[in-house]
Length: 117
Image (cartoon, rainbow, N blue to C red):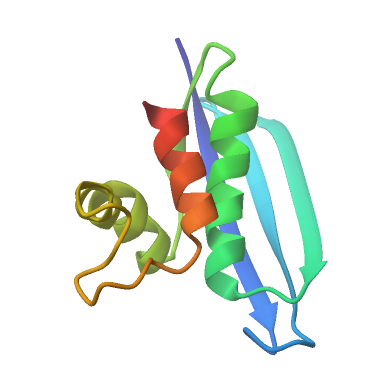
C-alpha cells in the first residue's frame, strides 16, 4: 500500500454566524514529497471546526479507498480528538455527550466513523 502525506487546514471568517465564510485546503504528497494533488473548497454559513473535519474527510474519501494509506496532518485539536478518541464514547452513549446533547458536527463525525469501520 502506497503511503500519502496529507496536510489539511480549515478556516472561517465570522465563525458560526449567518454571514460566515469558510473553507479548507488539502495538499497531498507521496512519500518522496512529490505533489500528488491539492484541493480547496469554500462555503458560507459554516465554522472552522466543520472545515477542519471536512478537510480530513476529503483525504480519506478520495484517497483512503484507492490503495493508498493517507497519513493526515492537521493542526486542529478538536478534529484530531474527535476522530481518534471522543467519538467512540459518544457512539457508546447513543451519539450523545456527557451533558446529554449530541456533539456538534455529528453528520461529519458519523461519516468519518462509518468510513473507518
